[in-house]
Image 1 (cartoon, helix red, strand yellow):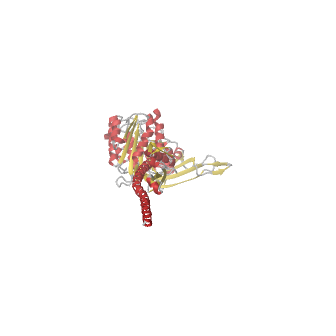
Image 2 (cartoon, rainbow, N blue to C red; image 1 turned 30 degrees about the horizontal axis):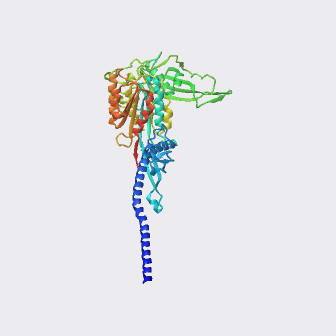
Image 3 (spheres, rainbow, N blue to C red; image 1 turned 60 degrees about the vertical axis):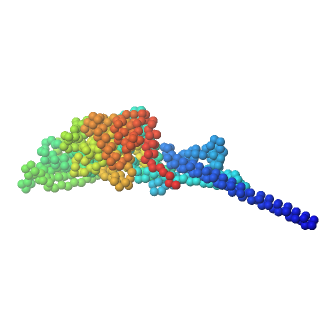
Length: 575
């Protein structure tokens, strides 16, 4: 019995040891399970905080306010927002942020990438962190890796932006034109990515104005046929009848076309004779003028002179002249200064005098500066320029077309743009809508202030450049929503003069109508009053109160223009 009792006691002791070991091993997973739940909650909180931080970083990179955003400036903006969201003064030091952050994100880092597709630049911001565990370390899990990603898309997709800019004389004071150029350059530069690409394919147009606007490439109205109204120069002759004078004038015009040098150098030879009982009147016209595309080598000298000639014969019946025959031509000038005069012709020593009406330009020597719209029966009395003498300036159209984007119709003189003498010699021509932002930046730098103020004509031509109809046809449709249209109107002056009046209130009334029509066309209008201007009119012109900016100094322009472009951009999280 004694031995059995001894063995039984040993067995009992062994059972107790096994239970202790079993219990001991059982505690570890139980504690790990309970602690894992706590660690899991901690990890989830860290992951949520990390996601908030990358969201902030992605948006900040997208709306980087730097004048010319680059990959580096976007990364800096994203990092600042990211680190600001995880900072904690009593936390752990983070090497990426170089600051103390919440303890669970002490190892957090983030990276930025960009991509462009379908007119949207997408900023992707991703982050990782190793979250330390507490009780899970009992089972060998010391850290848990977490990550987060956010994508933000910025788009001015198919946007068309018309910058309607005051170029009047007052813009030369207080560095206003200097700040305008620099701030405009900055917002244009912000449309380019780091490679200089117009990533959102935004079109921009520049509309400098004073009391007029100016157009380029107007010689012969090559690009604007049917859109503008000019007047033909009048002419007179001495020593000949009106019918004969017309023959001489038309002969020179046919020979020279719009070549002013040819016209000024023309020589006319005339004769009258009778043959077979009929009377004839003939003109032989010649002109010597420089021609850059023709030359002959003679006597060790290159001659660049061209001779053009035209002969026309009319049959005379009473006071009626009927064309009988004509021939014309030209040749390189190959001799030294003389062309044999035709036989049997009498040298015409009279003068063909060309003149144009003196009306048409604001403060440009015109006899009719202001004209009441109700007394206008034709635009001619306000023009003063012919096709060949027009240098591109335009005054207000006949009311009510002066405040609309309606296309000009050649059969309706009221719709045509009146070509006029230029009030100043410095007004930069309109730059139509273009995707070439680099060219627009170079062009904008050429703006020069001069002249009086007529904001209405600027707004009217702002509508014109955004329209799909002539004279400019680069704009998308106003009705199908294919393009979002914006107009930024900046002025520093009170309206002082338009085609009809110098009365400020009357000009403001025209401006108000133009602004209303622009907004009715779904153009989003921003207005900027710089130091001076008709504040109530400009505020009402803007599409909403927040889109009106009243600046007291020119140095506020850069921040203001940047705010306007942020409003135009559409920023959103895409993931």
